[in-house]
Image (tube, rainbow, N blue to C red):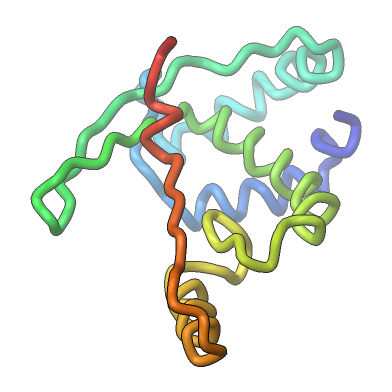
Length: 144
């Protein structure tokens, strides 16, 4: 956690959160409003993170329409939680991402659906005739 709250990590995380913009979470705080709030409140939040007592806030649920007519359920965290998540991501990604399967494309740096399609095409050219696509995203929406 000391790495997560390191000023250089937090600066990089904050630049990413600002760049991503995003709507306010349940607390209604915007990116612009967060900066003065953080200057006044960061020492207490940092201490909670280091003590292990920090608890993220709830997320705001938002449903958006998909092109195929379906719906996608989003969870929008407060800006503070997005900052902390981004800082954690910056620490954990270099450690764990190299260990992931080369066939894994979801939510990974420099990977996405186009890379997955290219890999599937290469596999088909090698003579394989079946591809299995597993999408667990809806699994995590269940609450039991």
